[in-house]
Image 1 (cartoon, rainbow, N blue to C red):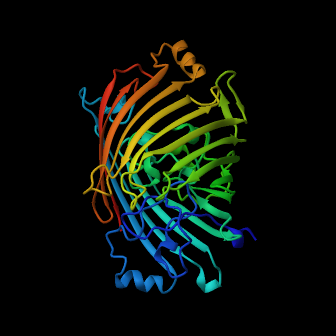
Image 2: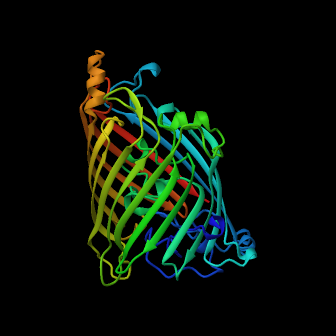
Image 3: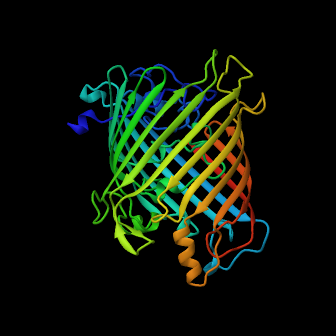
Length: 431
């Protein structure tokens, strides 16, 4: 029954000039966009914005069978420009020495028309992920998604069940709401500390989204937790991603409620969301050294469109946003996170697909963890602050280049290393 009822939602997009998450009518059964990623807090670029022509014989042949195939590749580089690279065995943060990462993500979707289903989708994908520094990884070659979705009640209720990462389903940390521009800047790790699945890792889950009146919504999820040791530990125990219930990994509950109004000719975009995560998996309580359940986190985020220069393209313009997150101090080394952001969609008239952003963050480190490190003779930073400026260039259909600089005060919890100025670049291609 769950397999038949599974499902989620993401509004359709039809041109490269459309916003990441427009509030549009559901795509028709013959629309290629109906086969794009659906149901998340973030969206992938439309198929019209890809290297492979949306009207090519390859696309049309697959669409005639109710299917679509997409490949995403990305390469990243980061380096601190204020000092010489650290030795390989002394690296403590991304960019401490030249850092590189790469991924390839192959996605197959089907609208299940052969089964007579409507407003449904099968989403299957695998991922290869590599990072030059394992703590920033993990290195993986595994399943990323194997899930079904179904919409009910004229798309008022949406469900998704199967294997997936909740990184794109809850919280909404991507700048501008798109995976193409969301690689900019910095982001909070607190939801991942509490066990939420993040790319390239997957976990079995069931998510339910209910649309309320006046642009309100409620979303709840059940997910098998990732390993308390983090990404590398999860990958070490589950190389294929297919293990349903690794010993010790229990249930993570996710709840989010919000108000989301898309930009239009009569009003700007407004998106408020808040939620709570609770994990029944045993984590080490640093306060007493025991393994205990009850790890948790809470979050609240807001994005608001300040100005809209072109009524015909209402999603373009200046946005402001903020984030506040908290996690259980006795279980997690990072326990508070605050962010302020200012970003411009289409900063230049002739660059409608570009995004410019400035982000400022402040992160507090758990007193339990830092006190324990000091007691062992280590030096620590009790908190960290950063300012990041970045620009994301839409070079050509399906091609995005993002570059930025981050000044970070307290780049690692331990040891107490000097401030950094990190240059980071990312090149993404959507086929």
